[in-house]
Amino acid sequence: MSKEENKKLIKLYQEYRQRKILKEDVLQFSRDFMPEMIYRTTKLEGEPVTRQMVSLLFK
Image (cartoon, rainbow, N blue to C red; front, top):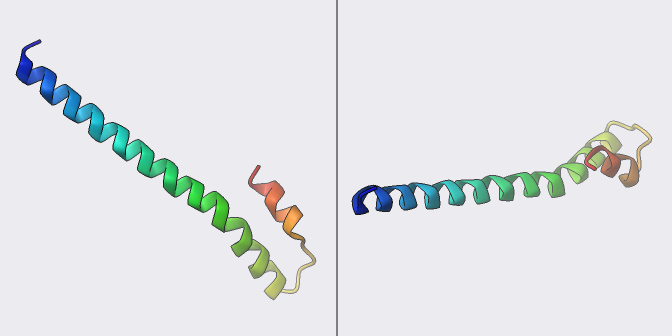
């Protein structure tokens, strides 16, 4: 591999790693936030639900 190809490869790999980190952050946010949204929505609808029941859906 030439130096130019090596630089391109390193740059592409760094971009890949950055995208992967961003996707993990979004997924973690979703896992943290969604149970509370589901709990509050079902409570508003009048369904008997507990936070523990909803948290079990995301484990």
